[in-house]
Amino acid sequence: MCWSATADLVAGTGIAAVGAGCVARVRAARDLPLAALPLLLGAHQIVEAAVWDAGGGGGPATVAWAVIAMPLLAVWVPLAVVCAAPPHARRRLAVPLAVGAATAAVLAHALAVGPVTAEIRGHTVGYAVHLSHAPLVVVGYLFATVGSLLLSGDRLLTLLGAVTAVGALVCAALWRLEFVSTWCALAAVCSVILLGWTGTRPAAARSSG
Image (cartoon, rainbow, N blue to C red; front, side):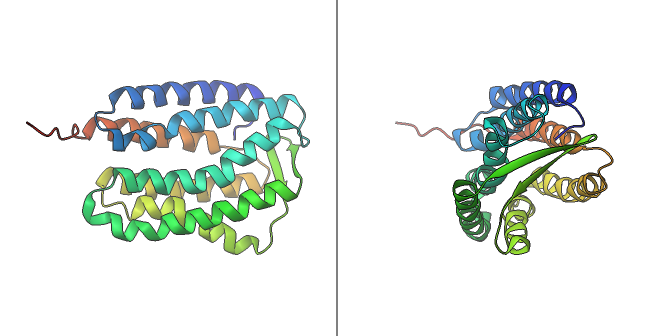
């Protein structure tokens, strides 16, 4: 989320461009889901530009934003980390992946049965979805996404998890105060870290004979 439609559009285009660079640098198929994450984040920002232009409400852009932000990312991130993680870390990463799948199922059900609406609040957009046991769902979401990065066993991905955790606290505080939405800046920083990560990855092993 950014502070205006123009900011969302510019940030989304830039983040998607970084994502294209990440994908172009991939040398092993198992790294592709995580390398493609900035493409998804960039598309998410561009979708929100449409939410701004629509003045909020519960239209298709709002629903698309919620689908990406909630169930899709809840399962995409831990699954991508499992794919990219070193073998010794994969067993423990099954836990955040399972939590992410359960959280995604709960969020998908909430979006399917209840309305999702967006409200323009100055330089922020507020989204409303009816959730039972919302605090538990939030904890599951954070454990699946941030937790999987912190448990990844990869130095740069652990750094990405730490940056995401601290950045999310700052962004959430500013958003709750309805001062300004800075989530797009966090997405941009995370995308640049992933670009650096793709440059450190080894090529896929090739069997001979």
